[in-house]
Amino acid sequence: MTSGPREWTRRHPLAADALLAVGLIVAEAVFTLLTPRELWPRPLPAALGWSALCAAPAALRRVAPWPAVGLAVASLALPALLDFAPGTQGLTFIVLTYTIAARRPVRQALAAAVVLWLPVALVNMLAPPAGVLEIGPAYLVLNNLLVGAVAFSVGRTVHARRTSTEALRERARVAEENQRALAEQAVADERRRIARELHDVVAHHVSVMGVLATGARRVLRRDPDAADEAVATIEETGRATLRELRRLLDVLRTDAEPAAELAPQPGLAGIEALVDQVREAGLPVTLRVEGTPGGMEQGVALTVYRIAQEALTNALKHAGTATAQVRLDFGVDAVEVEVTDTGRGPLPEADRIGHGLVGMRERVGLYGGVLRIGARPGGGFRVYARIPVEPAVVRPA
Image (cartoon, rainbow, N blue to C red):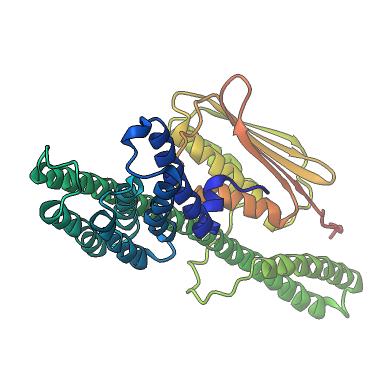
């Protein structure tokens, strides 16, 4: 993976700033070459040497900003010693003022600006360079202070923008973590709910086994055939109970919440009543059943009911003026439930966690099924689930 120039400058600040200093020297060399030779204050090699000395602090602007400020202030002695000021000197002061203002807190930035530009003002007032008295020291001081203020303001603006960008990134990171936590909480809540319902199913199976065992013991000597049938039913019920227990363990029911109110769990027989309730609530619904349910585990029947319930509830909320249809298809090795409507479908809500959708996925995934949810071609919404079934062996009584 290749990195861009910005990434390179972050990894190699000294080399990048050295290139900046070289750029300042080259800029002054070009300006000098464009000036008539008789106006050159010094021969070109000597002038470039002094320019390199004045530009050296710019190479330290990030790795050692305060030593760079000290070197820049020390370079103010050159005009008094050489009777001329290299052009890179002023550019270096501007670069250092901007850099510290953009990368340091406001107090440090103000201190650096004062340390840099106050000596400049004093030098221009007390010992102005030759050739500038015609415009007056006051003008020089005002001009230099204005340049320094502009460099400082630009640096603080960049600092504020960087701070705002970092704050936005942090907020986005926190929001993403909160969203992930909400999604995980929704899954955990739904798994606990499924676990409680499966607990009721298992408890029902165990109760049936106890009743059958009692009946078999009582008729064992009087009617061996009836006792054998009861024991066979206990056997099948025990196998179904073990399957439900495995699924119960899969959803990791480790919470210590108080048990919910015990009530008979709805199944296939409750879907017709559910359709009637939704129809009375204002959504025209039709129910179509294909095939024969046969001997189906109560957990699967409960899952089919919950999927139909959630899909019809969403249709009632979001479909608007529409009609809906519930289709149940009982095959040999699977049961299919499909709920369709002709409405507009749910509106996109990016910041909400779809608990109903999470619940349907968890339920169908628990039994190794397939769930498809989405818009229908031509309009409307569709919820489809296919759940494998393990039909119970029903022995004649």
